[in-house]
Image 1 (tube, rainbow, N blue to C red):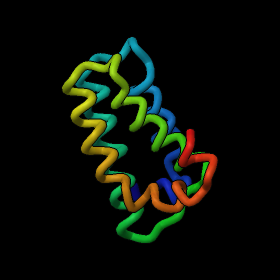
Image 2: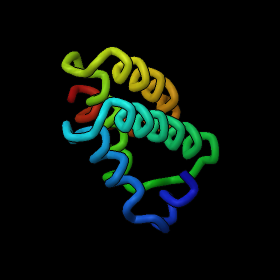
Image 3: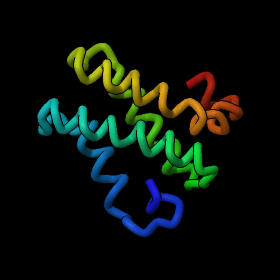
Length: 102
């Protein structure tokens, strides 16, 4: 999480997002990636760090994608926990009307 605000590890976030969204990756990779995304959101929020709007949207969209009904239950459960961990992080994002209705 420390690298995201400073963009010091450019492949970090794209790799996690790909792990969640790409069907070729096994369930355990998706679970680990969602746990990591949730932890990053929580840590960024607790530290008061800022990340780009694009990074915020991508992270939250990947977490929500993990909860979709077509996902296996273990993935959905971890995504739900990641979503809970991202609530503080998502607060500013939810202040935008277009994000609340999406």
